[in-house]
Image (cartoon, rainbow, N blue to C red; front, side):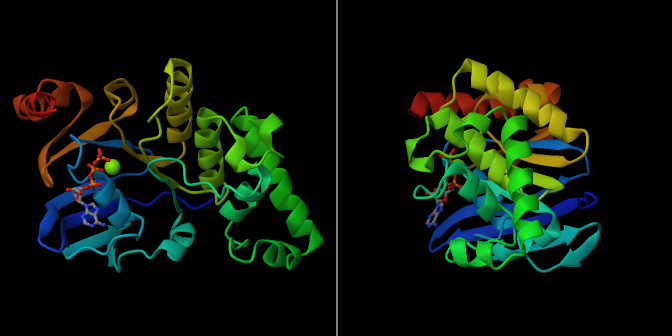
Length: 255
Ligand SMILES: Nc1ncnc2c1ncn2[C@@H]1O[C@H](COP(=O)(O)OP(=O)(O)OP(=O)(O)O)[C@@H](O)[C@H]1O
Ligand SMILES: [Mg+2]
């Protein structure tokens, strides 16, 4: 496992054509912290998440890792950097089983060449990866689904599989985009405990609409509105921040 490094995104601006999705946004994630990103729909949360996961290249801005400036990560570099992510929605490979999805999460196995790259590994390595996958599935309490096709899973189970797949590369930083989205009360409770357990060794960046989750598990929270950072602080500070309250009320009125 990688030692967690601090991650810092400084003055990030993202333009999609004429639309400025992020404007001069700076955030940092320190080792062992759970950092939340909240904001109304369209505020730029996923865009920021995508910048950090290499899916969106920012128009301007600087990335620091462990205090050192470096190029923006590319998706295939994330594992090396100790970063793993789950996407908004589920994003599993539907035509693969749960086990196979987890093996793809390990850096050695390629999605496009699944069986060939798996068979290309020596038997010990194959067995080791398979055991790791079973351990993770057991830890996430979904072991009985190992042989099911991803397309056949109940939604909350597929969200856990996505989490297990992200953990296969032993990240030191986990990026989660709306992990509680669409879950019921019990699964949300489970998720909160999971994040708190995970935090003892690693860092988490959590994009989430569920205030209950955010307020209970985050050490610090950043608030975006229309692509701008309007507040930053502890859950208590954020709860009482008038700009945050106004942004959310404004959004409710508009819907
Ligand atoms: N690839 C893209 N091309 C053009 N515009 C985009 C693209 N991705 C996002 N946007 C726009 O950028 C803005 C920010 O979108 P983003 O998905 O980051 O918001 P969000 O805060 O994640 O919202 P939600 O809570 O609904 O997930 C929105 O206006 C969105 O329409
Ligand atoms: Mg989003």
